[in-house]
Image (cartoon, rainbow, N blue to C red; front, side):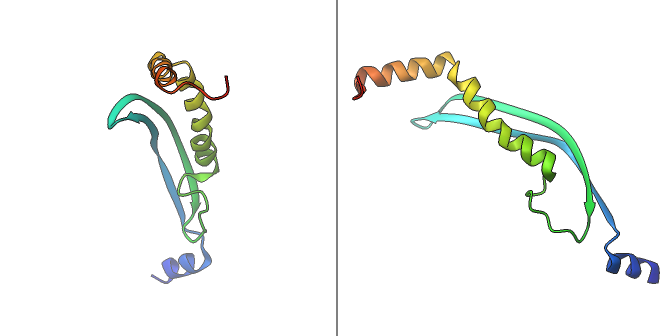
Length: 99
């Protein structure tokens, strides 16, 4: 018991966190999902039980990955034919002002 108390007071109790993480982007138009993109990655991290986490539980690698999915989503959705059809319909009913 004294060993556990000593270890916890020194902050040397490690915690391991691992698993498959997914971020899903749904593009919803008029309450209907037009298209959906899912990005997945598996990673693990080890940290001190008393450390302050500024990465929302993902660790720096996971946070960097989560932030990179926005650029990946924008790239993927730019080539989506459903989005092109939606934009063509929008331009038909609401001609752009910049032309």
